[in-house]
Length: 278
Image (cartoon, rainbow, N blue to C red):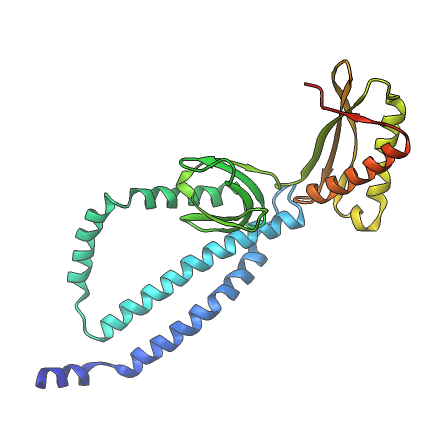
């Protein structure tokens, strides 16, 4: 009992309370500080648009905030243990032995962490990008979506149905980024052999130019959807390819609106579609 009383009297409770309060304040505010620093220090890379820079900096901010919070928590814990007069040397020694034992069972975690580090370092994809990923144990029909979070260990995707997928970084073998720098409108349809190609090309290009001039769409379109080429030719008709360039992630909206107007224009000009020519 006397030893316990001596121990209680030897603990600097005020210092420990101060550490907890300061640590809690830092933990709560560190995210704001890091975001401010990253956004003011981050340099614009060549050919990087404003939206690209925003995605890159948001991804880096999230990563640095997570790492900083872990450091803050560990610092608080070890400081409190030190104030409680806990001998940390045996603790670190036992942690080293346990670390070696656990290392054999933590190979996947190490692999995920290394893969996550290189994903962020090489700027392969960022928060807000739409990607397709393939790799170890990833089903092809569900491994795509908008990146909601990139951490050292996992990448979080939300697909177009609203489902959230948590993918270990080490499982990703290939990632296709559909919204880096710019996006493409690209699709093919087939029309009958009797179609006047000059009239069709004129109609396609005119619809694209008008769409790009409208206030709602001008900020989204870089190169208006236009006639690209005549493809395969068959007995019933031939394929026509449309191409264009949009701002990142705007290709689906632009493509949908262009198709809607193209269908109406073709109907007005009596141009009929047929099954795609293989």
